[in-house]
Length: 309
Image 1 (spheres, rainbow, N blue to C red):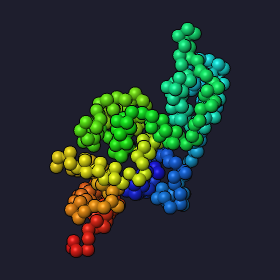
Image 2 (image 1 turned 180 degrees about the vertical axis):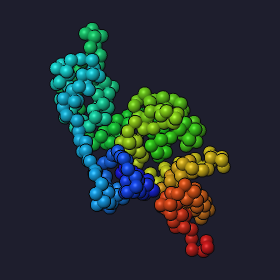
Image 3 (image 1 turned 90 degrees about the vertical axis):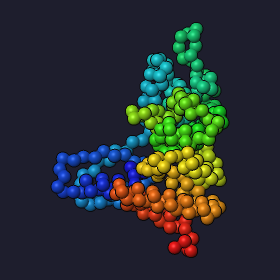
Image 4 (image 1 turned 90 degrees about the horizontal axis):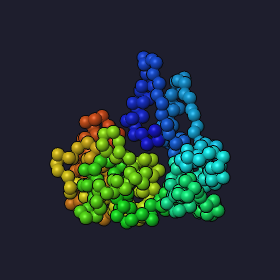
């Protein structure tokens, strides 16, 4: 819920605060470290409490050492007692973050510190080498460092996919990639095999975790992000037919191009982007997304010079 837009929060608030709606419950989750007193979700939760509606909060923290041992034991098909020295080190390195635990276990295998021995027919490991592994306490930083060792074309695919959002499909990815820059089917297969993306029931693709998406996004140097977003948006626009210019695809183009408004755009480019923001604003209003519409329309106005009226 820390990412929910204002329209979504307004709808949730309306459902929760309506006295005529009975026998209704909502289950949501959010990162409390990303929600401060200025966040719209904080205001919604306060309004719910002030109206006497019961809220049950469950704080989910890192998993315990024994839980990590159970994961390692199941993964390696070995007794828990035999895995305890290894799982203790993994728990210390990964801080009990379950996603970090799983990916750290995979990285140990790739680095040769955790291997399957054909002679003994079981997994074996070098505990001293694992203890000496330098691991960032920040999962995103650690994952980005791992991604930096991947082939450059695959890194490019990760960066582009990260800018497309939490969900994307094959056709959009093909429109976002320059010809001969990357083989899309190969990228998707490698992404799935590496545990970075997964296929949804609808046939589109999504990141296995938002922090993996963030790690992929961090591959883009901060000084290059505005340009990367803007040129990605232009590429999507260039490779799109008029019939594609609606809904989420339109918003994706505009959101990326808007990230580059601080670049030195010429007047024609600014006028084109202003028209796209107008189109996105009208599209948002047609679905009652008034807060988003206002954002797009104001952005369009900001792009126009004083003599444009």
